Length: 78
Image (tube, rainbow, N blue to C red):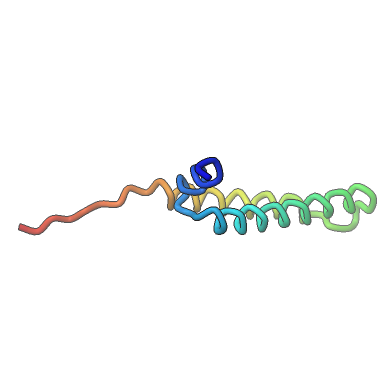
């Protein structure tokens, strides 16, 4: 079981939460990939969908990584 939970735990997620996030990312990547293939065949179509997808996913990953590594401070009052 540890094999399935170690990585998600480093991101502050359960196995099921991580699976949902990864599946959503994969679906968005697939949609962007299909748009790139459409653009390859029809250069006038889907002109920026692939790069828009990459930019959006990158921004989301950076934000998620920053939130996961953010140091939580503790204030003491005496």
